[in-house]
Image (cartoon, rainbow, N blue to C red):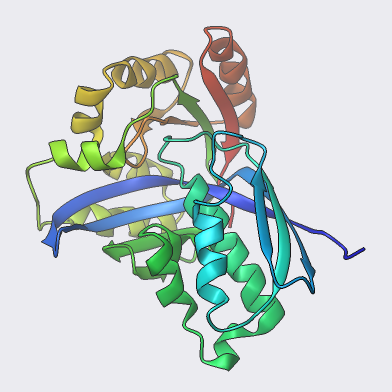
Amino acid sequence: MMMMKKIPSYAKINLGLKVSGKHEGLHILDMVSTSISLCDDVNISFNDSGTITTNFSDRSIDDNNNTVTKACQLVREHVVFGADIFIKKNIPMEAGLGGGSGNAATVLNVLEEKFELSNRGVNLLRIAKQVGSDVPSMLTNGFKRVGGTGEEVEKIESNMKLNLLLVKGKKGVSTRECFGKYATHNEQCTMIDNLILAIKTNDLNSLIQNIHNDLTAPAIFLVPEISDHIELIKKHGSIISFMTGSGSTCVGIFETMGIAMQAEKEISKLGLWAKACFTTL
């Protein structure tokens, strides 16, 4: 029996998200994001069958039509391999946390390590972009700036650690619908530059002052309870609370992990999904 390898597939949050325009129907973004300790578990074992099977603990995900299967199929255009992949899902769906994109990116990194794809002339970034716009940025952990339509990724060197609480209601936000409700494009992104400087210098006060998400208003229009969740996190002791990505997950930054964990307990009692976690480097 082939040995199965288990790899964490980290979620991400956005600390800054600006929509600056559109190109060929896709929105041009300028974002600052970071990976967090919440993760799915990717289990993969290789074999000589020449076929790939993909299964998820969340049975609502189509085993034959998902980001991981698509990534494997694109790589198999260059390298023939067989694999059994099982993904234990801990990251909720339609949450703006990059779960599916992160799963694909994690598998692509495993395939790069095993088959040395770059030495075979395979452009991993191009394949990631074909799978989905968020996948290229998920190839790298830690803090990063993401631009264009998701293909421009710049690592931000920092040892900053943030204590976080994630809260999500039962309703998700469709990314397509959320962007469809957003109308104003702003070319001025000084907030992003300020965020990056704050992260590099470990300046928490400056980071808090510059957190911003252009998609918050349209997401709240689609799922009004997001506004309630932002206020609920504040009520339970966060320094700041905000929505990440296109929603519907809301995030709080806390002074200590202890306070974040206590808030997780109290908010979970209300029937909401809540998870204390921290940034990963």
